[in-house]
Amino acid sequence: AVMRSVASRPLAVPSTALVRPLLGRWALACAGGRRCLSAATAVQNNERNCPDITVAFRVAAPASLTDPFALVQPQLRPLDVSIRELVGTDHPVLAAAAHHFFERAGKRFRPTLVLLSSAAAGGGQPADGRQVRLAEISEMIHAASLLHDDVIDLADTRRGAKAAHKIYGNKVAVLAGDFLLARSSLLLARMKNTEVVELLATAIEEMVQGEMMQVRATPEQVLEFEHYLDKSYRKTAALMSLSCEAAAILGGHPKEYAAALRAYGRHLGIAYQVVDDMLDFSGSAEALGKPALSDMAQGLATAPTLFAAEEFPEIRAIIQRRFSQEGDVASVSSLVLRSHGIRRTAELATFHAQAAADALGVLPPSDARDALLHLCFMVLNRSA
Image (cartoon, rainbow, N blue to C red; front, top):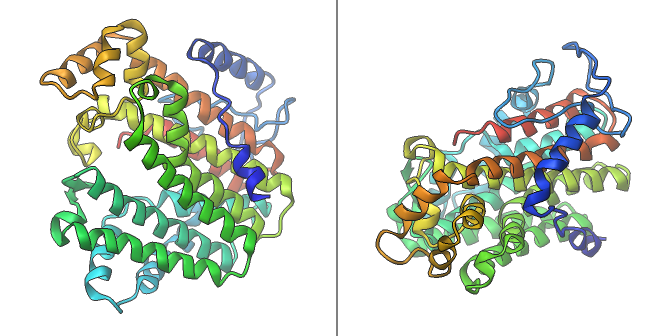
């Protein structure tokens, strides 16, 4: 079952020329027969058996949609304390490095996603104890990956503060990430659910594979959009996708619910990463918590650059030499802003956010499903 779930990962992303027409068809299909939603009424499905809602870039979510973070706040607040307890103090330096990350955590996007998936699969019933533990584990795995990423990327800051390796050194930061992975693996094993253990282990493997794709990409691969999207799935979306699926499995819900949540997490995660890549060009360093244009500074070509290269072919050679010559970053940045790269990147993110919303049609309408729909809007409205 796990292999089938991962095998279904290949991204059904159309060629860039087809993104806009597909978005148009979605708008036409989902807008027909729209009804006014009251605050007390969950979004129903349309004739396509998709939630009757159209997601748009930089458009606020309807006021009737449940606030995702408010809905799970009663479970999120103790989760912060619980994670600190789970990290423990047996190894003070490692624990301190791990706590350095958790003290600067944002809105807890991934645990919120797991808690909402658990509730949506249950028709609105809150996550149970094992599903809450899964939310904690997903955040620990995410934290471990960021501790490692900051060392690999030579990052100076994380969320506006010094990166852990800048305070404790590379060795301690790497070991702190390993420590969190080991602790999360132990907690997973205690769940005694082989399928869930395999799913989360697969998520970790995918994250490593994504990092290797980034480091070892050939000059030809760095120009391929499929390579970029596959890497984006592995590095960012895999943990979201497989955690959402695991939440449904832990709740004993039908397989089609688990598959729907897997698809939702996959598309939402890709939209999240694509918006992140766009913000590298349009966001401020203060808002991002890292220097602007940091992707190109690290030699990485993302969606805005790849789209711009279709209009300005001279960008291709610069991408292939990984922006290594003086002036490369400034030159490509200027060309990206002159091109339609930012707009087309926004369309690509919207494509996946809408696909995530559509995937939820299998689940029964509820406040929790509405909150998952709200997250689709929030991802497209991110400023950091």
